[in-house]
Length: 229
Image 1 (cartoon, one colour):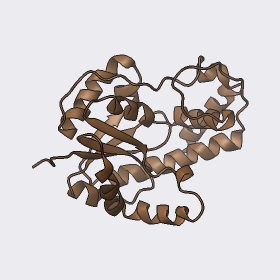
Image 2: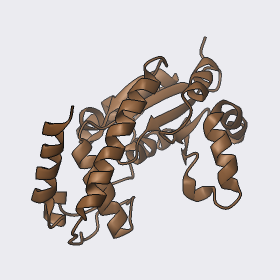
Image 3: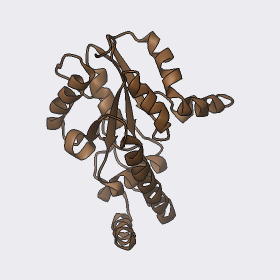
């Protein structure tokens, strides 16, 4: 039996379209999307130790936080490092787990590098793109980081019932948004209604026009894939 007050968490790596998904859900009249619930930047100083504890036991912290909900349905994004046991306990309490992934590890790595070097991770409108040279060690580090968490997140989700979403298949184009939102609404148990995302692509040009050494990074990525065991 579904909870009278639906609750959800979005389990996703960065640069997978999670802010777009949160924006879509937040435009629903019955859904309150609280954003990144355990964002490292919000837990500074001594609170970083509290954050570590919450990552291990989100099933204790998030239900308390959700008591302040102003709409029927409440939730937000949790970090990819959130405890698998904690997520399983949340799901057992009736929380819906939305697992968002992005197929292209190359695009995720490039996106993170550009956002980091430009100092801007999110946008509500396109801005004039800079020209950037992405250091190869930074890019390769991101590829390894993303590959590790791809494996880890698949392991975590293996035994937890969830709704699987894919950036390329479900969010990359505005024409996909309503169908995706309807699937999520059905999972959450709220009425489907027209939704509008407020998050736009960050830049006015593609990454191959922004990153000066884009072709070199692409060759590095292809070589990494070719030599992977």
